[in-house]
Amino acid sequence: MKKTLIVGTVAFDEIETPQENSGKILGGAATYIGLSSALFNSKASIISIVGGDFDQKYLDLLKSKGLNTDSIEIISKGKTFYWKGKYHKDWNKRDTLSTQLNVLADFNPVLTKQDSSSEIIVLGNLHPAVQNIVLNQTNSDNKCVILDTMNFWMDNSLEELLNVIKKVNIIIINDEEALQLSGKDTLFNAAEEILKMGPKHVVIKKGEHGAMLFNKSEFFTIPAYPVKKVIDPTGAGDTFAGGFSGFLSQKNDLDFETLKLAVVHGTVMASFCVEGFGTFQMEKLNKETVEKRFKEFKKYTRY
Amino acid sequence: MKKTLIVGTVAFDEIETPQENSGKILGGAATYIGLSSALFNSKASIISIVGGDFDQKYLDLLKSKGLNTDSIEIISKGKTFYWKGKYHKDWNKRDTLSTQLNVLADFNPVLTKQDSSSEIIVLGNLHPAVQNIVLNQTNSDNKCVILDTMNFWMDNSLEELLNVIKKVNIIIINDEEALQLSGKDTLFNAAEEILKMGPKHVVIKKGEHGAMLFNKSEFFTIPAYPVKKVIDPTGAGDTFAGGFSGFLSQKNDLDFETLKLAVVHGTVMASFCVEGFGTFQMEKLNKETVEKRFKEFKKYTRY
Image (cartoon, rainbow over all chains, first blue to last red):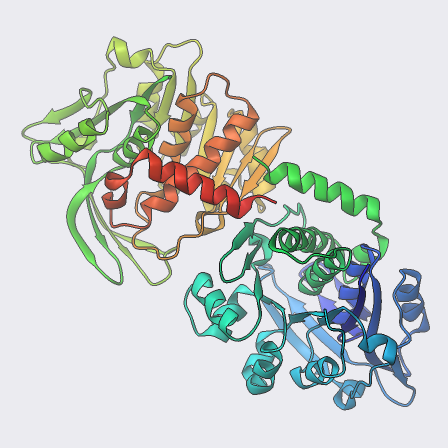
């Protein structure tokens, strides 16, 4: 079992869908990545920052799943990062109604000796400057760095983002973002271009249409698990990254066959995430349920 | 090898893409289905109608691929069905610029004894009344009827279409059409509803996102073969149906495992079709190329 470090937001989300309004609930990239990776027994530590308004019960929840929350800094006089978003009938469209950085604005993570020796580093969606600060403090010889990011950073902090990208082993990105980052018009050309930026592997997420894995000479493609009813897509990408990294943390060899299985497990985890509001479904999961769905998915895709 | 009967248009197409204008070329649903199924050694007969303006070289081409063209009626004083369409940068959008039914307007197929005993019947996209006329003349006890149709008939001849649907074994339809036909809002619900209309199996094509196969208790999903450069999507759906039926014609047992493989072969054939203008790529194919791509696709999708 490889020691994992997850950096990202631990936050409050407020989500509106055509059916429901969540109110203020637990959210954040590191939360979803952590909850997802925890299903793989990953020895993961979360590095993040919250305000004095953050609920202890949420930290207790993360701990109860086996996640190490000691590196989640609590700024008692500050407020927790808050995001409010609204979905439409077409789940692919989402409006951000409010983003309040709060304590995240001054987040300057300092890694413990324990965290800095992690072998799997998951740079969750966050300002690339912060991702870089974390990355520069890690020191394992065999580390595997997995980067998740989004179009917001391509629009606003491209240079810092490219600076991170060149140092990571694996980048996880969605289809539109891959086209934007590469300036290409097909996913194949995009992946080829992004591989030149540094990563050895590129994972392109296509939401309800599945995911693809590329390196310089190999390719893998998989449809999504067929979710019967989507309740809330929030966190699905982070959950994918958590399943991906959680699966890898169990493996010694990170060859292409292993990475394929990591993509499949990321896909399976994301399918659970969208079946509930916020982290609701992720909190209820156990290993048996995950294993059952993996087997079912294998049956659905094998020929 | 099961004897196959294909009914559908043999026609002239004129295709505009952002890159090219094809001029008047060989087209038609039965043409694509035939060319595709021929790669599987299927003993297929095409039943269709053309005008005196139709080029003998096209009939010769079909014959050279092993297709029986004796049941393609030639109305020497009539004109061949003509379709002109235009694609945009987004391949999913297409405008029909012209449709001239010509000889197709009076098509009233009469099956030879030989054709009527076919075991695989492919009802290619055509007026459902004509599909019904053909179907009612077939008499094999073990026949497998495969229906391909499109939204145009749902809009204009729904009752006649439903009358065909209730008699077929397998319906092949695209995602939007499945939602329209069923009145449902997810593909799972759509498939469930369509199964109630008669077919034992439903294949839903999702274009660049792959295909799904449903029956009452089983499910299969597959991504598309990753085509590097799409030249012209015309005929891809027909080519899928041809690969699907061609593969089945080789098999005695039409169980779910066999149907899954038929979907995979339909997917592989469609990937060739879109790589060339009109039937261009389909004319050049040989069995080795198909087999090679099938193996490659298997490698891309296996885990």
